[in-house]
Image (cartoon, rainbow, N blue to C red; front, top):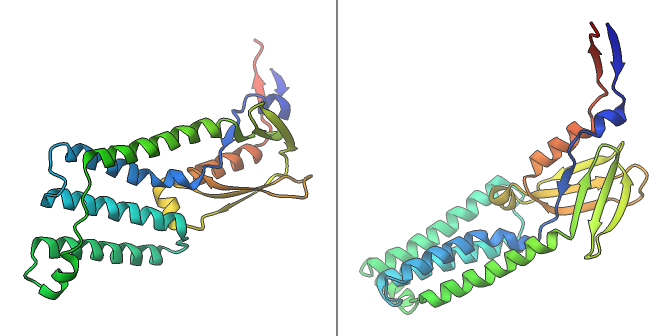
Length: 234
């Protein structure tokens, strides 16, 4: 019977690094991307100024408007998020109701009757192409600016020439903040603050996807203990 002690360096060398990326908020427009794609496909079989074509345009504008609100404001509490959804759903339902049944409130119909948004397939596919090109650019850009957490060090890769900054990972303080319920619902994203022990400044990553999982992985990595392995030699 022999006892071999695995040193912390031996144990940490087999730990996979954790990659952190600060994504721009434009990725939160992905609902608009998919709704525009669906509306574009449907518009291939519908007339743009038909009732169904107008309904498609209303749904697209509603989705786009909600997405813009997500980018413009923060919703720190679930209550505010619920109220917002109720207001938006009521507004969209009222518009669709007055369009399909104008006799309910004639004076309201006079107001909404002049509002008949419509768009053809070319418009929707143009929106899809623009957002798709932006997302492709984001995927390329984040490959040149990301963080790598290892048991012994924190690495910041940035720049087209792969510049690298190193910071000490032991005693790294990590703070997780979810300031916008909308962002968390859409992509499980939030703010991650990294504060190395030997660095006077903190590094703030504003939009880290799946932040709960990332924070848990970092905690497990930096909080792991050395392991003692027993082996028999016959």
